[in-house]
Length: 362
Image 1 (cartoon, one colour):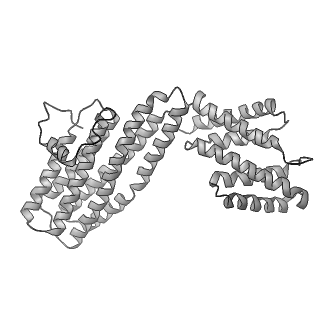
Image 2 (cartoon, rainbow, N blue to C red):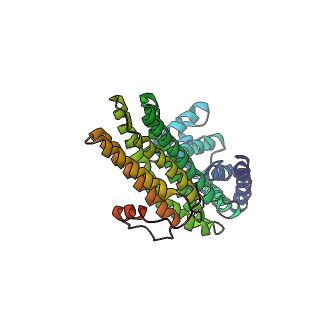
C-alpha cells in the first residue's frame, strides 16, 4: 500500500519547510521541501546514497545557475540552456541519476526565482541539508519501515519463482515436452530480477535498522537472511544451468528415465520447505528428506541409463542444486556463526542420518 509512504513524504516536506525557515531564515525555502521529498520519496531504497546525491546535485545546479544567470539572464530558453549545462556538469562528475536530476531541478528553480544580488547563495545548500536531515529523521525515528517484512517478502518471491521453475522442468522431463522446457529456461533466466530485489531489500533493511533504534533488534534476522541469500543465489544459478541441460536433452529427442522427473520435483518440494524455514526458523520441515530423495532418484536414473553424458550433466546439476538448498537450510535454522564451514561431504552424510521423529510437512 502506497498511501502511508506518501503521507510520510508530505509530512517531511512540510516539516522541512518550517525548519529551514526557522534555521536559515529564508521566506520561501522551497529547496528544503524538495530535498525532503527526494530524500524520502514515495518508495524505499538507498536513502543515504540518495541524500548525498541530492546535496551534490543542489551544489552543482546552484553553482552553474548562479554563474550563468548574470551572463545569459532568465527566461524559457535560458532555463533550457541551464538544464543542459547543469546536467552535463553532473554527468562529468560521475553523478548518479538523483544527482543529475537534482542538478537540473536546482538550476531550473534558481533561474525561475529572483537571483541573489551577490555571489553564490549558501542558503540553498542549507535548505537542502535541512530537508535531507528531516527526511532521515522521519524515516529512521518517526516512521521507520519494517525491514524484516520487506526482506521476507522479497525472499518468498524468490522461493516461489524458483519452485515453479523446478516444477516446470519436472513436468517437461516427464512429458518429453521441449516447449515446456524452453518456458522453464526463460523463467529461470528471469530469476535474476527477484534475486537482485532481495539483495536491495537486504541492503536497505540493514541501513534502516542501523539508523533506527526501534528497528535495530532485527539486524540479527537480517544477518540470517543475508547468510542464506548467498546459497539461494547459488541455487538459482544452478537451476538455470539445470534448465539448459534439460532443454538440450529434450531437443535431442531423448526420453528421461522415470526417476529423473521425480528428482527434480523433489527439489521443488525442498524449495517450498526452505521458504517455510526462512519464514519461521523454529518450524521443522521435510527439506532434508526431499533433498535426500532428489539426489537418490537422480543417481538411480543415471545408473539405469548407463554411461550417458547428457543425462549425467542433469544428474550433477540436480545434486548441486540440492546441496545449495541444504546449505541455505542450515543457515536458516542455525544460530549466527553455525553451519558456515560444513563441507559438502558432511552435508551429504547428514542426509543419511535419521531425522529423529515426525517432522512437520511444508
